[in-house]
Image 1 (tube, one colour):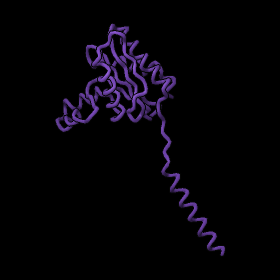
Image 2 (cartoon, one colour; image 1 turned 90 degrees about the vertical axis):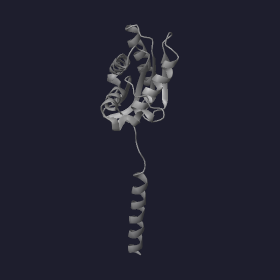
Image 3 (cartoon, helix red, strand yellow; image 1 turned 45 degrees about the horizontal axis):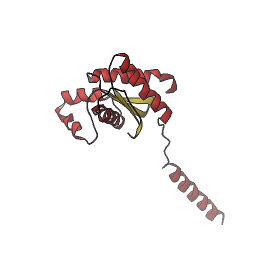
Image 4 (cartoon, one colour; image 1 turned 30 degrees about the horizontal axis):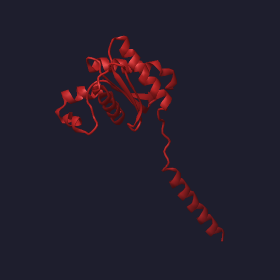
Length: 162
């Protein structure tokens, strides 16, 4: 009888341990922080006289916030969203990806992935080492300027990303 009880208890521990091992805890960006970062990016670019759109996505690449400057072109919306998705999906700045594609013919196929835009202007947003989202900026006269605005926006909330 004691042997049966011990065997049943052992089985319960194994089942409980296996079930709890399947639950993940992930960090993700809040909608409030996403809006704050998007607004900061548009403001950073406006200070340089660039009319841009900024999109912030969560860690899975789903849109959380979109801010379009009053005079930003309509194409900037899709560009910003795609850059943000690309950066969140790859966990990499899109400018770095563009460099890799230019230098490595084997990476050229990245441009063919649906929803990817391999141009500078997308940056992962991290809380510690965890990517919690990404920002994409589109509309400045070069991806390097889009990226600079994205970096300034992330830096403006650095104290909230700890």
